[in-house]
Structures are given as C-alpha cells and as structure tokens.
Length: 597
Image (cartoon, rainbow, N blue to C red; front, side):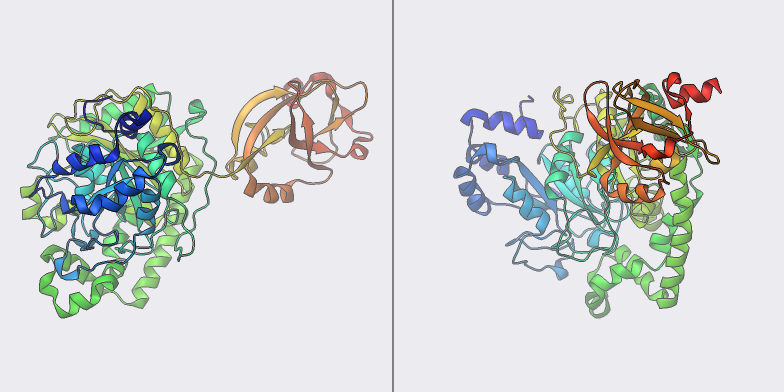
C-alpha cells in the first residue's frame, strides 16, 4: 500500500480490523484541500461531514463496500445542502435532496468531500470555461486539463479523492481522463440514473466515473448503475461480457488516419499503443472513421445544441452577460435551428447509425486515441472554439450512437503529457469493456495518477462489474458450429464460444433429409450410443426465444448430457424424424462427416 491511501484497496486496508476510524483519517484529509485550488468549487467543512461520520461509526465496515472512502462530484450533480452552480454563480440553487447516484454512494459508505469545477453548464472539453478558474493539466500546467469534468479528474489524479463522478455528453468523462493519466468509465446511455443531474443534452448525458484503476472505476459504476423510475431516452440492454475471456478471437478496429499530434509526441505514443494491443494478442485492423466523424459533427453543428439552450433559456434570454462568453456563443447557435432541422438531423443520424452499426460485423471493439492532441491554455484562449472542437473527434459520436466506452492511460508522450486510449463497444457492453480494460491495465507499467509515485497495485481483481446479460449455455451440434453456415444466427444474438466438448456415449447422429444447408439430427438412444463432438456456447437468455423461432422442424432444444456428466440445453431432434435418414454416428461429429464427404 502507498504511504497515502489512493485506491479503494488502500482505504480498506487502513480500516480493516479497526486499525483506523473514518473520523481520524478524513478530518485531517479535509485540511489537505487548499483554498484557491481551481479544481474545487465547494470544499466540505468538518461540520458538513458530521452526519456522514456519525452514521459510519454506527455501521459495520463489512456491510459497506465503500466504507470511509473519500470522493468528489462534479458541480452539476446535486448534493443536498450544497449549492449546485454548474460553474455559473447566477444559476446557483440549493437542492433539497441528493442525486440518486450520490445517494447510492453515500449508502455504500463513501464520504463526500467536495464538489468540483467544470466548463460552465458542461459545455466544453477544455476545462477553461469557468468563472471559478481554469483547471490546469496536472502534469504540465501550461496545458489544459480537459473538460468539462476538469475538477473531478484533477482531484483524483492528485490523490485528493479516491474517485470522482463526472458527466459525459461529448467526451467530458473521457478527455480529462486521457489528459491526467486516469481511467474514465463512460457507461451506456440509459444505464445510470440521472435524477438530480443538471442536463447538458438530456437525451445523451450519462454520469461517468474517474478512478486510478479499472477495478475501482468498475466497482463504483456497479454501485451507481440501474436507472429506474425516470425518463429513459436510450434503452440499455446489457450484453454478454465476453471481451477478455477469449482474447485470441478479439478483433480491434483502429482509425485508418489517427492524425495524432506529432509535436507533442502523441503520434509516437499512439503507435506504441497499437503495438501493445498486438502484443496482447489482439487482432488490429483499420476502419474507416468517416461515418463516425459525420455523427460527431452533428452534436455541435446540428440541432442537439438546442438541448443545452433548453436548460439555460431563462438566464440566456434575460441576462446573457452572466454566461461565459464562449459558452454563450456555443449555446446561442441553438437559435439557428427549428423543428424541421431537428427532424432532418435525426433522419441523418439514423442513416449514419446503420453505417456505423455495420462496423461491428468486422470488429468487436474500437480502439482510438482519447484525444488526438492536447492544447495549451494559451492556444485555447486564442482560438477557444477551434481548439475545443479538435478534442472531440474520437468522443462526440459515442453517446449519439448509444455506445459504451472506457478511457485508459496508455503512456507518457515526449512532451511530458499523458497519452490515453479509449476502448469503445456497442451499448450494453460495459462489463465486456471493463474486462478488456483490466487486461490492458495489467500490461501497463505506468504509475497511478500524477506523480503519486505509486505503481499499479498488485491486487487488481475486479470485485464488481457493471451489469451484463443473464446467459445460458447452449450445446451446438451442426450448422451452428463455428465457421459453418448458420453460426451467424448465434453471433447476431451475442453468443460467445465456450469450449469444444463431447457428449456422453448415449447418442446417435443422423444427416437429415432436405435441402441446403445440410443439417444433423442428434438423438438420444437407450443402447448402442456413441460420444459425439459438439460445442458449448453462451447466449443471452433474452435471445433464446428468437432463436427458437429460427429453428425448423424437426429440430428443437432439449437437454444434452456431456461426457463430463453435465446436462446442458442443446440442439436435439425428434426421434421419428430420423426414419430413413443417413446414420453418420461413426464419424463422431458433424465436422468430421463434412471433412470426409
């Protein structure tokens, strides 16, 4: 453990066995939060922690997964009794209840120590658009921290909080992670409750998590997710978490032209990241980013900016001078769009979605630079809109398409700035991405955060994962085997190959009559049976009904006994249907019969 506790494991070790109490550790911890630090908007005082500490002292550490762990939240997320400003003092209001995500963390034993700075109204990727001050990059202060969740990333990178919540509409939970050597976990839109979170674009926003390790980010996300009882603008259907289980089959898409900043050393850092992916056994292949670039442009050039206007409309119309000038300029573009433009943009998005979705036929995950460059604060001051827009190339499209993503540290560039990569997958693949991210992290030799002089912890076990689909095993006998004509029916339903196995010696295999493709029939017999080669796959339970509809008579699903004694659901055939069919049991399996034929 590091001298100063950094990770969740560090904090647990300090409290384990009653070696320390939250009051003894956290009250001195607050004293570390310096006045004048632009990362904070509100720093909690000892009296603000009183109720939290008293409750912890009456509670059992074993019952609370985040017992006594300090955390921070972005100041567009409500905390009862503390003002929510969204970095606009004129907009400040005092909420009467916690945001759902905050309440869940407090219920898990975490201790809130402050609210963090942001680009005003979460409008920006730079971290400089705030009257509370520009948040500097934690490595090279002349450069930006990234935004809009600038303060949340800064306090975690410097070890002032074990984790922090941000929000992410266009990359605000990923770009600051990349610029500060952090993990930024951005879930599938619709998977996290948004009650008590001030919207930027309400149909796209998600709460994100900044942490020093993948395991910490995943555990926090698992504790806050599960949106119920509020409007959901994008559905979240968890999918099979297979990334990280069978890495030999994983196909990773990378941009044809990454266009990373050579002067900063980002181009070289990206090449090293691709090399690391290949060294991990991942099959990298280039993809055309044109459809995704077109989606990205819609976010600020299209009518979605009107969602931002809807949040601040009264203030904008009555006192526009109270807004940050650049934020006012960006949000003011909403007046250029009408309802017709909104629908036309939606139609365009759906056309692009079809193109983008087709990409997943050839790859399993997309790996991109988190940002292709990192501007200096002076460059942003000179050209605020242009410099900001450059940072969203690999982030703006993700929420519009309803996808999931995790930003990861990937190395240090020659400029002394951190360089990060982001893994992106279809919506609902959050658990899958976490597993793959953990494997990436395990191959890293980086230290935690910003000059904390602490290596990655030896124990990086994933204690909790974001939700994934319930699955069931399925024994596959014939044309659904890998590489055969009907295997696509399984892949389209999110199936994962588990193992090649054999049945118990109680079966006969027949070639059924009929047209192409050839189909086998597996029959259980009372005597004279043999062992047949089969495969076991896992399939989301939600997909079983549609698969049954695609299975023609005389096939169906039954129970198949394996040679290891297990009895699993699998493809079976009605016994009457094999009368007169060719018995091919002697070949020992469908593949061997095909090869012999």
